[in-house]
Image 1 (cartoon, one colour):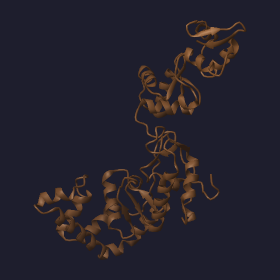
Image 2 (cartoon, helix red, strand yellow):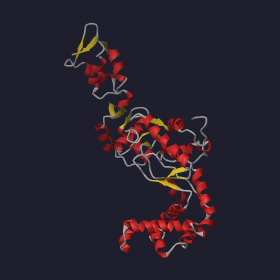
Image 3 (cartoon, rainbow, N blue to C red):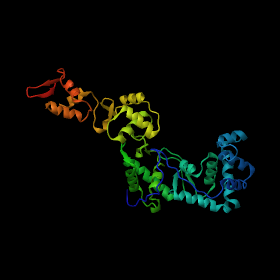
Image 4 (cartoon, helix red, strand yellow):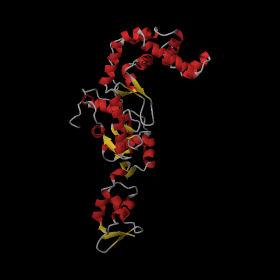
Length: 363
């Protein structure tokens, strides 16, 4: 890890791939504050804000279209009423008197890095949707908070520091460009690579948890359940089914595994259902896996090539004749089979010829 990187306080271990949430400790009562602010606006605007942010008995948030249809007015007119209501709140005495609460919320976001994905921010602030709706309303009303819309490259996020937000966006874009399409990096490596792209960022933000949080803003960079990072579309990063989980399990093991053990590990490591027979069938169909023994599968990226023992012997003889012991040694580098299995294949005169000096060549 780079020297400039500060380690965050130790946290309880989570299952691979689990998302760590920010945890809030907000002192003010959001219910009371929201009611006080809403009391400052005309009735029609108050109703629009309640519907738009889910601040009433309904938790769901209505669209501009839905509210317009209810009152037989245009979508644009609803938007104007909403904007006027928010402006009324910002100009009210209740808003000015509540500045300490908004400052506390601003300090909370600053402590998380100044910019944070919207979902993570709201999940950290509240455990239920109704409470999240109140915080969402306060973020929109507060003059210190800025929301960036979701794009093809980034998830929706909130920030309180424009300069830092721009630096993070730029660094994430540059980081993506440095990654090869199939490259996979350990978490420490991706963080160090990210730090190289960050310039003129407050040293207080050079914290491991903050940097990981910033990484999750990107839609083009992601991590797999083993906390390995790369381009979001990379085969080793996206996990869509048994094949992908099997790949991660075998890669983590670092050596060939029996398909039964692969299925068992998928259940234990990722808490995903994986029937033994289904897992075996998926391994057979995917070129990332090579059968190297009785039920044993390795990764093709380790240098294993598909084929039966006969094919492996042929590959070994490409460079020239070999004797029996040499062939056994070569085959066992890439296949987990008994010597007799190799000798039976070697004795098939349709494919191999034995010379007087005891060496073999392919027919």
